[in-house]
Image 1: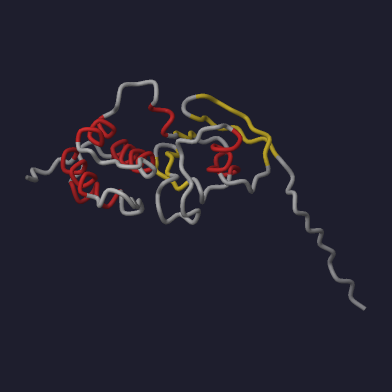
Image 2: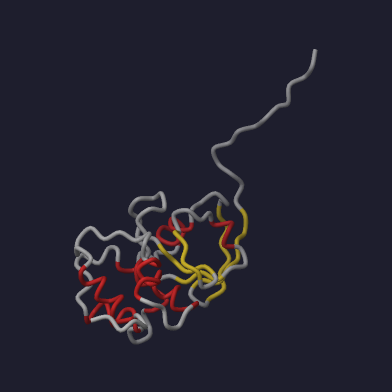
Length: 168
């Protein structure tokens, strides 16, 4: 008779230390590796600027920058942040509005504001990698972000304002 392998299933995965830079500060957390970054940010670190909406990576409300690149924090497990640099919307609170934030304000591109942090971070991430993007490149950078309030008119004006195109 062949002995079957024994597996132990636990509902509480072992915690581990995860060290990463958050908004320029190195932090170490002792957490379960399977926790989502969005939950750690909002619940453990009280950084509620990163929003939760769809929870499956389709709305963009939870976008943060990881090593300068936009990521849906609802799809990232905390262990994936080990050694990385994570930047949330809170990283912008101590400086004057950057050009993306200023454009959102000037163009009235927000209503309830729930989607705004994710959109700002997505565009900031794009502008980190391309200084003078075209309107269409910026529109594509926001393809994963949904807004349920504004009708997108103001958001499209933001893209026109920030783009390198000569669009009237």
